[in-house]
Length: 133
Image (cartoon, rainbow, N blue to C red):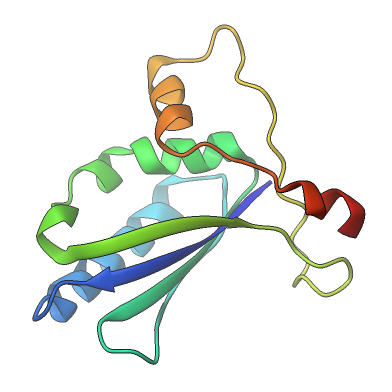
């Protein structure tokens, strides 16, 4: 399982364009990706801030999402001011039914796309999580 919280800030005046892209991304993701569990966007309290909660059956499904044609086909540089991806882990018996975020090793025969995704979006499990599972 891989669960992330994306912290997003949009360029001034790009909110409508951003929301249109996100609408298309959510539709296409649920239509074409078997490994997605949760994929939802939220507006934040501060202007031009958004959050995305993403949960996938494993980190490979997340990497496939990031490298998908529907993800790569958008001009995110035009609308994004800043984005920070944070891997999160559910609190035991309080995490909405999502299993723990895990970081299995890259298989020796992994595709080039998975190797690229592993470099771009490394999953790091904080040490303090192990005592809280």
